[in-house]
Length: 492
Image (cartoon, rainbow, N blue to C red; front, side, top):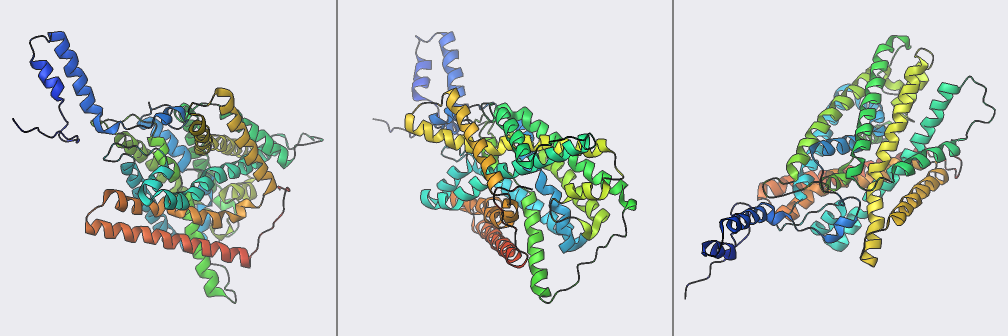
């Protein structure tokens, strides 16, 4: 008796079906049947090791549709990767100076782009499993309990906390837009801040009825265009109106009794601002999960192409915004609101209402668009609980109910805790490892690279943890020394 040959599946040497080979050799097989079998075998070899999909994924909003492409990837990445935090970038230059500010911004850009590449590579394992959610990848790398402990809170904060912040910014900017357009009409009873929050939340919930992540690709495109537009508009206005300002100072503030400690923590706060400007790592696996994948065309290829294009645009927005705005305003940039408040503060008298109103409207539309993609992991998690218990997809009315519930809950938090942005440095520092550290550790644990590569990634990940601890420490120092105004249910 001859020995049986072991057949293994691998991308380089796809397995051939023994049944198919024997069937093709029989005289009973017609040419049409032979062609059909060959076609089926080729298809199975093509999709072979990359199709281990959880059937439950077809019921959830992130992975319900898998017809994404590089364009969708670019739209989603731009919409999630650039936004209001970028308007605070010039503020970091007041502590670091122009030269060190550019250096730190460049290093942070390269660092987070590399960790983004790591996540894209880790999306598809060699065994065929696709990790379409950051939390699942964390659990696969660190173990179920430790993975949840390390990643669950940061991911939920980056999703839910961002949505709460967007309600505050979007609702507040709606109010500013209304005052710019209708300020002189003598309105008797203008809407309060809470009512503007409610208007924004209602609009966000209405748009959130789109079923899945792929279906909001057009919304993400609008969000990307508006973000690029208002970032460009702000730094162009800053340069063109620079001469209308009084003398601009680039000197650091006068030293205080505890000058050394204050300087160190102001630098840490500046590094935190730069780190927070680059966001969206908690969404990259979800975006990649909307794409089809096969051995010949793995999803990492179109995903990385879309990300490269998106980050080219992000760089062309963030670097001019940070450098030009710092050159225009120096140390006069408001610490609350950054460049958006600087535009209203310094140029409300010498800039047309059209430009000011257009900028405000772009911020509002971008906030509405960003709300959709950052809320999608929350929607997905809510539906996951239902489908796990009931073993069937969510009916449409329940899916709408989940989204209305989350929108109302985020509105409640925005109204009840209006001081939440003051804690952004503290809470955001806890979330820094999601971007800069965990991808390095997960790469080591899953890919098991060579010694030199492992040492490099351990050092890079450890540096991310140290940076996170430093940012949290600086945020606590600022809270203790400067303080925060804690007031409940009184948004300004």
